[in-house]
Length: 288
Length: 273
Image (cartoon, chains in turn brown, purple):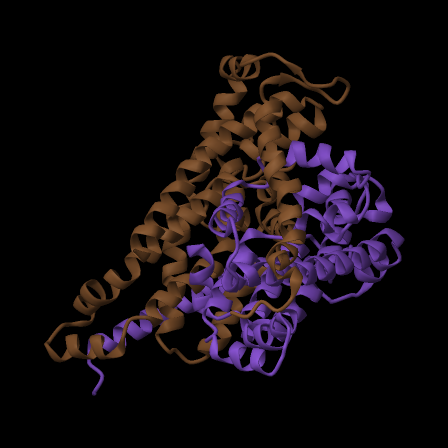
């Protein structure tokens, strides 16, 4: 490579400078700070003051912390539902039905819908009086459900929004897996007398398995990070219906307790990190 | 190949599944549209007796809503533009130049992907306040102007470009920057477009961060404005539906214009990162 210009030794750093500065200031420094804040008494009115693990001890001793954590972990149940629906969607799009292109677009519409809009639409369906879902239950002479006020429905309702908004995205990933199965392989298996189910099980599924694992990790991470759906769909529910991120928001920006919010944030970070490292490990071992 | 009876059954099941999924995808939005375009005299949550633009025209009179629409458009496009530009700049030396600390820097950049924005929202807030960006649109644009994911995506795209073209340009006397601009960028255009589309979708929907850093109504983006409409008990809920429709239309139009950049294998590549 020719290096005619004097400043060429500096050139790589100049290209990297804007992006690296932004990442350093708004990601790296905050990551170090959140760890530090979690070890301080720090509110809107006071500067951080070192208190060691006091925040964590108070978290552990408080009832709401464990309920919040349990709710966040329960929210992970949206992952199997997402996998089931996105897999079904991928199969229907891949089966070359009539209007396949239109199907793909329609399944993707929820993905581009702003979450607050999605949550409002679902809130209207889930209204306890006059909502479509409860009207349907009444038709079947089943009791109405308190979708927006009572547990466990206050978790299930936002999960419906997450499912609705997410399946089109994961469908695209799984579709990539289905499209990567060589047709010759299917045909060869069919010629050897394999039935549809056998082909699905022994040819398609092995190709899809790594992507299914990936999808479950990625959707688990975003389930742990959920905020919009809870904040909007079940607006105003008490503390014991919340998951981790809405509680971080509540502690920090409603109550002004930055130290406590940071300790909760760090706890969530630790849980998410397990999933991220799993993701990294699986991706690496597959590429290697 | 002739179709067996099993084939026909499977296809019938697939059509049934597709119909169900279409209902699921379109249903909630359709109900929102019913709410937004039905007269106040109708029962909420039914099929409208007649369609009316009254709710949409009422909410359109709200200065705050029009300001929010403008703010959302500005923030979304500036953020997406910066995302593509800064990622493409940073990815170039990572893919094509040899320099000290390249490997370490790349790993560090990737590592930031593991830190969820939701976890570090408190220190991000104090930094933004410290820089005097609180309650400005800059607070939305600057921290969101780079994603490690974007840098990764661009680097992959650059690595896939054969070096012959650059060599040819270099022999013709093109500078390094010129090569980036007139060889690398055009050849990586599909990836850059995909990154732009992802950024637009994400920025348009953003709720938590703007909620944290915006205070004045004149700076609100659409999701924050809609959130505020929901919070006022006096608000006719149909107005919130109408505002939601106004938030939905631009992104749907954008999506139909840009959907050819959303190929399944781009998604698979995206999550692998």
